[in-house]
Length: 475
Image 1 (tube, helix red, strand yellow):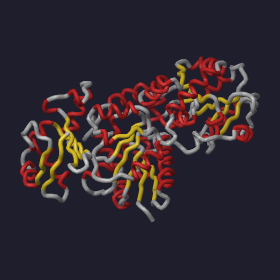
Image 2: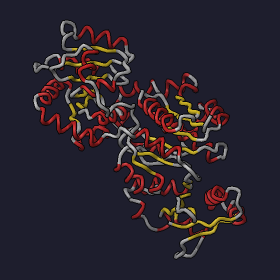
Image 3: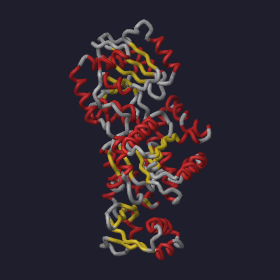
Image 4: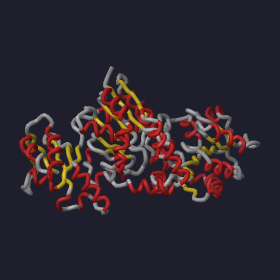
């Protein structure tokens, strides 16, 4: 048996677990003898916390979407919720998971949700876990809740998100733009005639794939009612997932039009359907959108959740791979307009392929399994400085004075090891022209008794480990 690899998600919707499953497959493909376990952290918590984290979220999405958007924007700056009551609530309700994680003693931890990432990072900081930690975001825009410390590597979904992270001070060697991990087979060839025949689809008309997403519900019914009014020849496949009530309702809505509308429940053949479809109609969740992009499938975006889905939609519109319906009563018009313009559909499909990252899971697996060395430590003062800079709209490179972020690096390799502030660096080395600094245990022990330098003492002792002294370069 090879290394122990733990892949952690949280079942808020289905996307985080889908990404975790894609990473699991990629890890096993790269290292077949690895001992790989995938875990939904919410399955280890009590029912009340589970409902609060999952069901309550979708209740808010349904009843007060504006509040979801406000919460997303409010938590957007990195480290804003550090040491908040929310963190204490999470830790209190995940004690069984923390014990299980500590006892499992994995070599590699890969997280596709911020909750297990924060908990794993806390155990590493307390030296209760020796694993490497990599964090994989599942939306196109970075959101501050994902950033934790210490961590080994951070995977952003696109280059602009990577650029943002480095602009606020995260060292470039700790961030990759991998894309969002998706299931295998989305970008490969497909026997279109066989797939169409297996679903009872005609060979001579375009296929429109309508997805209910994780929440399903009223918007799906509205989309299908609109699609019933389309007069141009097409065939729709409606995927209702595990929502049996919605499937039954859809079958009633399309009664008499079964030649044009195929209603499905859960299917494990989404990759086939995406590769034969001409258009996807649904919400721009991170996984749905990234799968469409990997398959080269243009999107008609409906009813995006304020916050992450609106930002996903912005990106897809910017890249020319999607259109958005802002009116429930014009979805049919939008679909028909695209079907009437094959050249535009072809351009959108090409844009989707350009954006798509079908190899994202393999990239995450390769980097995570080859991770060596120590994680990146971010001092509390550096976290506060980063938060203040972001709230003021300042890039790290533009900040001067005590709040300026400085990177301490391993002298032999140049690998980043810690982020500190300029004021903390001046305690270690008062020489403004210094390119390196020596961290020594006696000095760190002395700083422990100075309240203003307690954070620096913790940082120094972390960097020393079992050493008595260590020389680090400054960047």
